[in-house]
Image (cartoon, rainbow, N blue to C red):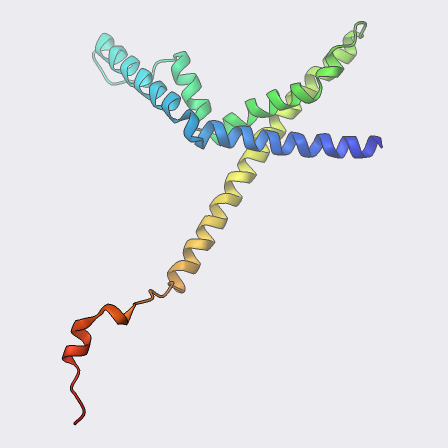
Length: 164
């Protein structure tokens, strides 16, 4: 029974981490938020460049930090992995009298969940790119034939010579 729960937790972590990352990075529901962050970063960069009178790297802002996370699968995968790992190990943290070594182990476990989420997100996007690339290659080499309905082509019948 415990092995089933461990496997179930593992699958839940993997799917939850990948799904959360995909929603945050590519989901339409977060598109307005990402666009708002892009505008904020552009305005902050413009203000920063005017103050310094020269082009420079983007200033460090919360908008820039969030935008960097929400446009990068690996970055977002790390934070999604931390979040999903925390949800799955919530009961672990609720023990009233834990030793300091168990707290340290729990913190390291959470950190490993973040790393695993980052890895899973990169694998997911690479597989998605590979599937897309192979699909496009198949479509280019074997184009789908266009079905042409000749019943509606009056001009084709007019140009054909009649057999007398």
